[in-house]
Image 1 (cartoon, protein in one colour):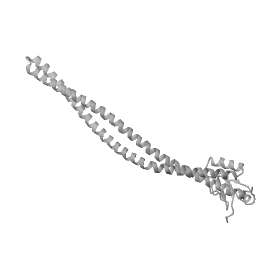
Image 2: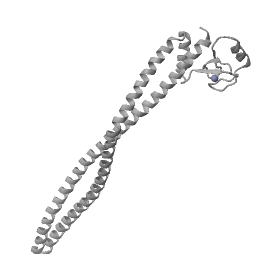
Image 3: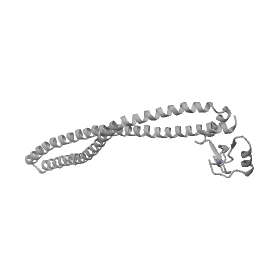
Image 4: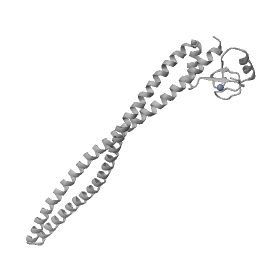
Length: 238
Ligand SMILES: [Zn+2]
């Protein structure tokens, strides 16, 4: 088989590979887009759930502190009564000290309750925002998932068809040439290049004049000295 006969098959194979490569890229983006949307929805869900647990814990602590503060307020009343009943300086000072200590303990709890209240409010706002976003994205996912899946299936069908065409095209090429083609394609997407005027169409290098002259005369594939692609001569008119 002369290279003039092989060239159309080689070019057909290269075109098929380019279309398959583009399809794979497209499929990757579409599958990835859907996956990242799913991941984001799941992350928001987790954030909302964790946030609610943490708010519940803080509210429980806050209630406990409030109960303690109320109990201490009752004790303060008792201390005041004790102070009123004190019969001498020593008793009065002791009662006074107890009263001050209790007041401080109540103040500490009130401060803590206030701080926890502020943190809780912040956490609630953040959980609400995450929940709103979660609901929006869930709706988006439900809407796009169906359409996206259909597109992915269509692209997969196109790809299967191209793979069948490719297998048929490969059979038309000498095995040695195909192996060479595959070896180059392992390193770069397009494995072939043509020349009409002494310039490689793959990398635009000017070919050595001797090599170009030989290509015009002989019926052989060459290899570009720079990009290493399978190189063949095509007269300008074609
Ligand atoms: Zn080249």
